[in-house]
Structure formats: structure tokens, C-alpha cells
Length: 385
Image (cartoon, rainbow, N blue to C red; front, side):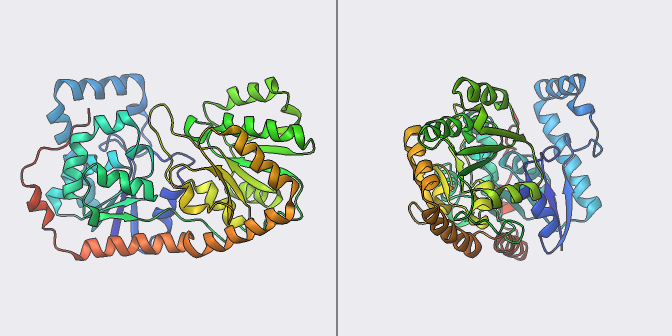
């Protein structure tokens, strides 16, 4: 069986979950990440200013023609590569490929991850397309219970929305020992609004006043990195904070083995963006670290308050500082919570379990009759804006 993993554009460094689908699904997989889909892989023209201007003009002058060209390109790709099913990564990709899947009778599985089910501008732009896609798709994957609820409220058929969070490599992320680690807080996330790096930093600054030997190490990059560097200086904690930038997986795993706890203050962004289930929180749990985080998105699916970690409400900086301080001062408690986190992540959130569940969904969709294509009839394709 050959599965096409489709993505509207090249993968970003943080999209490890998509690479995992390409490499670990027990099928012959084909990654298709050209955008526009008729561009050769690796072509940069579409991302240049003239290329973007041409695409925008095409959409504005002849939106129907532009969509037909997209569908035609995907039909050619799917035929040439002889795919049996399509796994669309992110909702907008599902909208882009659904016409081709309908023409060829291919089962379409759409994997939502976060922004595609929460950012208001995205939901407005793809509202019509999502409605059609919800009727056509054989399955819709959500990575958190909160996302599952959102998709159903948006009109997705409940029996086709499957909860399946991305998994973690429990062999790579292992070996943390909070009981023996120094009072070190680790954060690993992109420096973007929904990850709340400034709030994590502010909470650490409060904890540092009562635990001067504490240290914070922050992994990642992004548009808010410069702001966080300046904030660490203005809070007079720059001597205790290290910004490590983007790091490969093995370095992140090693940093987790050295830490006492993991912290992430996720919040709903001004755009409406909400986390799915943050992979770094799964990695921390697999490593045996207690997690101090917010009740946000899929985090409460993983972190059980006072059992595998400690949770606070969004933007409760003082509350996060108190919980950080509790673990910084009590390595025995940190080890107890971390051990429970390791067991929970190993039992419910391993990469093997996630991939096996996804593969089962794809196989069941491929075996089912494609009656949904006739169900949609001649519905108009969803607009790409």
C-alpha cells in the first residue's frame, strides 16, 4: 500500500511529527510538499516576491481556474506515484487535495495539528472548504481532546474525528533523574506567542528570587527570541538564563537528562492559535521530568496535576513561579512526579502507539467503500481565499 503524505510547502524544523509519519508508517510513503503543487520539489520561485505576486493575481483574477489547476496538478502527482490513500497534514492541505482525491476515488485522511483548528483567520478563510472536506474526508485526526471537541463543533461528523496525539521516541528521551539533578528548569519550544516564552521567563524570575541557585535553559528560536533576551536583562536574571537556540533532538534529550523540571506556559494567542499536544511536553515526560505548565490545549491530556506534573491557569505567572519553586526545593517530589510522567507517557503517548493507531485508521479508510464521494455530489470546492 502506498500512502501520499501531503503538505502545503516544505516541512519546518519543528514538524518532527510529520517526518515521523513519512518514515515510520508501515507502508510505502511518498512525501509531496511542493507548493504550488505543480512546482518542482525544492523550487524557490513560488516563494519569491514575483512568484507570490503571480499566485495572488491568479487567485484574484480567476479563483476557480486557480483551484482547478491545483486539483489537476494533484491528480497528476497521485496518478504518477500510484498512491492508494492520501494523508493530508494540516486542514488547509486537506482542502487543497480533496478535489483530486474525489476525482480519483482516493480515501482522504486529514491530520489537524493546532493552528488549523484554532486561528480565527484560518477558520474564516477555509470555512467553506472545511465544510466540504468534513463531508468528504474518510477520517479526521485530532491531537488533543480539546481539538476533537472544536472540530465537532465546526461541523465534523463525530464518528470520523479520531483522537490520536503525536507520539514520542521513548528510547531517545529517557534517563532523566530529577532527584540527582541541580535546580535546573528546562524549556524547549519555538519562541512564538502561544508557547508563552516571556511568561515562562517571568515565572522563573519570581522563583529565582527565593532560590538564587536556580537556572533556566531555553531551547528554540523564533520571532520572540530577541524580546526574551531583552526581558531577561530587564528582569536582572540574564546571569541565570541560557538561550541555546535551535538544537537537534539528541541535544534536547541530553538537556532533559540534566534538568530538575520542564516548564512551558502555553496560552491562547491573540490570533486564536491554540496548541495541539506539545511534543516537547511528551518528550519531557518520557525523560522522567515533571512538567510545570498551563491548562491549555492538549496539555491536560498528558499532564495530570499533582500526579505527573503541576498545572496552572493561563497567564498565572505567580502560580507557575510557586510550582517551579516547589520542585526546585524538593527533588524527591520532582522525582516522584517525573517517574509517574515516564510511566504515563510510555503507556499512552509512545511513537509506536501513535503510528500504530494512525495506520489502523488509514487501513480502515482504505478498506471502506468510497460512498462519500457520491455523497458530496457536485459541491463546490472550498475557497483558498
